Length: 366
Image 1 (cartoon, rainbow, N blue to C red):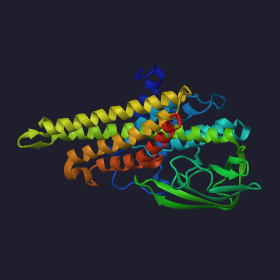
Image 2: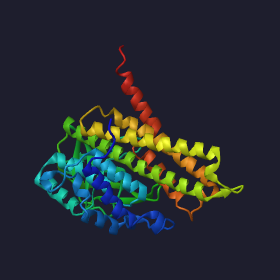
Image 3: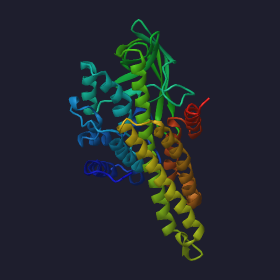
Image 4: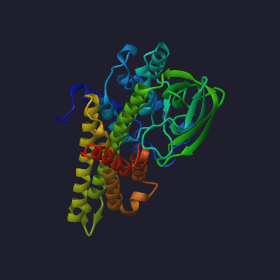
């Protein structure tokens, strides 16, 4: 398979890199990142919106570019490299895909809001589930009761898309975060990002997608695209960790020689390089399969590869840096925290191995 970028994909990478470089966490500071709603890098998000990045992934009928998973991975890789604190995945995937599937005037209006930088986010995650679920929230007579976990950017969000259980199956609903019956509880994720538990107590909800198999398919595809985009973040995160390690072993000297001249160091660097390349290939393979409606089993494979290999890459980077790698006055620890967060956000490698095993076992003749 040809993994080289097209002209348009290369332009997306160039634009993202140019904007993100001005807010690069290695150059602008990593020691005291703000918490709560202020964790969002609002100036960076505005610049990305002005550059037209979010609209690339929205439907053409709403003024978007209708680009797919590969182009989203290109942007995610840049975000991972620079640790950009923006809601690109949360808005264009978690909210954008269900809204695009709905195709109603209300949904299209929200998509146009996203295009202008509005924070519309999805609330689908539930504890102890590698994918998205609905059992934690029950829809009844136009209201929702229950809770969702790990909702990023919930406090500054202007609207939620929420999955909920109904007698007819899983449905998707729109909820006003500032409306009655909505309560948010802030937690801090591994990478320092605030994520909220959102509790619904008889809150008014507007139907977005009717319950049934079609809606469950939309939710599953949303999860798959978000998981691949998360793997795209890991491509950038591990690539930058490798670059930081390369610069360190070239500049750091022991016994009168740069660390890079020691065979054990070069072997570690080679292993990390192979792992980063493996994450990239597995991720873009999965993205290609999603864009061409192929077997989404490749998404599971990408999550396994990204989870296991990213842990090795960051482990090697920490090892080569020695005590410097865990010093809060050096940026590498932030890449370690972000990598661990993305490794687990859509299910651990072991959970995905179980899922893949179950899928393969189902193909074995009885």
